[in-house]
Length: 145
Image (cartoon, rainbow, N blue to C red; front, top):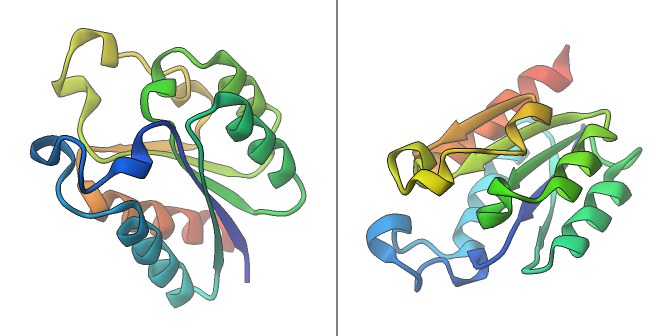
């Protein structure tokens, strides 16, 4: 049994309300429930954290060291410029899966660069809630090795 840290960055607390044409109508609670259910199928547990503040996410990543086997992270807009999150993830020794509800590469040009991807085990984009479930599957496969 492994523990997964599920991190959500800025504005993701507004899921279900903010730009439903891009992000759909599922709420953050719906995403957390889907990940928790998917993880339980593998015998894993989930701790979920959402913050609109970069430092809170960095602190959560630091606290994950030695506590969580994996981090599933949707950094929101921090994806594109938060080098502190990049550095915190680089110091984390577990599995890191970057996930995005929409496909940043199909959106505005400023969204095309991820500073998280170079320190992530893998990235899943554009698949909505299914992307999170695939992230759990990837974590389970990696942790089982």
